[in-house]
Figure 1 (cartoon, rainbow, N blue to C red):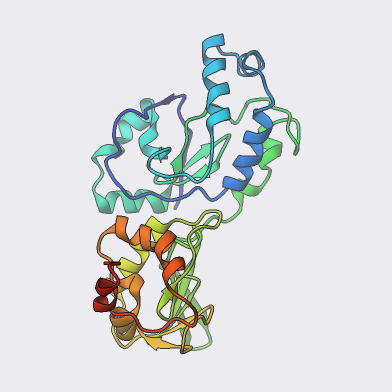
Figure 2 (tube, rainbow, N blue to C red; figure 1 turned 60 degrees about the horizontal axis):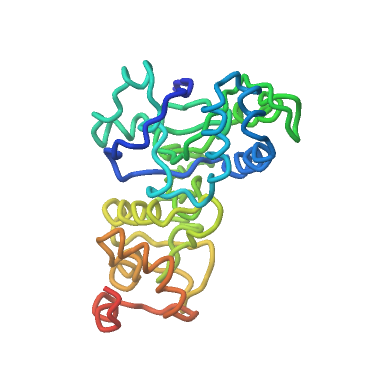
Length: 294
């Protein structure tokens, strides 16, 4: 079940977010295309297009000019916490606990003229662009033609599905980090980890839609839920061996040694590429400490 709600004109970027968890919008590339075209409008053009005051036209002109990727907690905010208005006041997402946020993330969607379709925890930068705005663009004469059927297509999965092949059942795990829709596939006591977990490594997080924070959360969850004897099959072989047990990864994969998200992000995005060479070998916690990396 999916519940679809509209965005709000009123935004709140002053109140601190009540959760550190966040995800990346799935349609950022398309949003960037719109931003590039909106930047060609003068403040008075925006006021006329949206039937708003000169003051608001200038405000949104500035928003378009300063809109930039990547989205982080420093320059963006989770959609369900950024939007204000009657619906969002009634929803009161600020009071949600972890389980309630997780449920909303799976079942609630926000229709957006700029971002297409947002999940509650998707980061967004401030904007105003209602879906009904008659903004002629590279794909058509309005935003409905720009988005077309993209926002009605099946969206990102969120794990928990099962694929049945003959007598085999394959469990789908949603493991964002490398991309918003990254997945692992578990068959019995073996798991295809794709671009999420490599033998003694993990996937990149610097590509479009990648998020080192989401990768940290994904690996943390895998440590909590996967059994030690689970055999992993990565999507790429950058290591001294092709497969490994999860127990061996807990012992020797440096990306599984970090308990602090800031330290993990620093290692994933900067230190790792400067200090490790392929093929990757086992690197236990003591080795990280000796190298002053933990």
